[in-house]
Image (cartoon, rainbow, N blue to C red; front, side, top):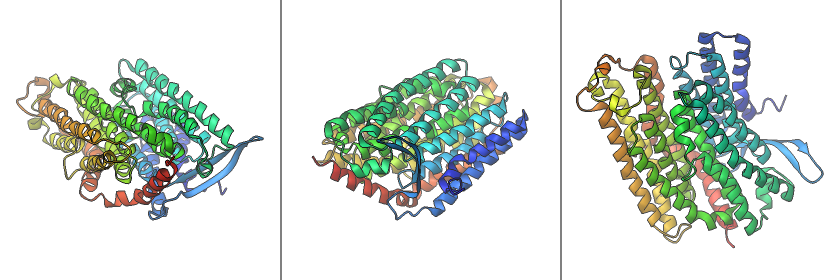
Length: 502
């Protein structure tokens, strides 16, 4: 009973209760939607309870527990979970976006509604488990588990080429995960434990082994981010996924990769991280510029937003491998910012797709005069995505650039050119976002079918308002968000820099 009542277990597996109810309901579409929405809202409430139990001044693991699970002669596997300043915001982001994504399916998903909701709630279980697991074996189970619901969400409810996109997504992620599994087995067998706190306490991984282990973990995480040049699965997955799938894919699933780098690569392999920081920053900057340039050339609005994720997550990777407090804090906040802003963009694309059943930029124009509320919300979210001061994107990108500049002046990166080229990505983001907005909303109405379009409904406004509140809150007063992560990041940087000294 004690095991079941652990707060983090209650949080992680509360969606399973909704799944069981849905399975006993039968095929009642309307009721299935309400059960899934209610379950996700309860899970969000539980995450707020966990936030209330969280001590922002404690840099260590909190609400942690570990039970012996699988034992052998020379090593053991624990069922261990915990939360800290590195994961609390990502847990809250997951539980916040899930009910919003479910609410967006009210008219978008009409077939096999119960099955859709079951897979969606199971996906939430997997994502929360990844952020909370403190044993490498347990982490790997949750990591792989997230593939299954997302595969079905894309493959059953996606677009015309859904099976191609689903299989590509599955195979790409699985291929990288195999290398990570081999590295996990090496660590568990050679160190005698898979438990992350025990591995960190041992801290005796030789530098040469760190290099290869870093690369093995990085293979899995870089594909999930995705980093250039391992990104080609992402546009297909986004374009073919239903709107709710795109929201949760961009909002949370991509963060599993960046979180993996933060939680495992930087802590377990600090010397390798120092050695490879310039190479990782180079790939990050290439991704920033490449994603922005390719976004500008897109004719499909959803594909434009998909490629923009490559650019935005390049900023996150640059911040992480600045290897200083400013860069890492900016990276964590930017993970949240990207989830909010890009998730909102996918919702906006979904709203217009439900009305016109097309996403081609050439099919729009002059929508401001027809759908003014929709236009204003799109403008705010677009400005947020491009990093306008006063909105959330600016705070994250500025903090990352500050950290990268410090790392370029005698720090881990050794050159300020990383910051210079990353700043170019900020300008390019304004180019492709304003281009999209101009093509869709400004000028005369060019397509007659658009003249009869209705503005946003109350349900669609209810979906967008919580996202807008966070866009302005983080942009104008980010202090509470930094306060949650700051002690843990300071401890990480101190331990990391100490361990990284040859």
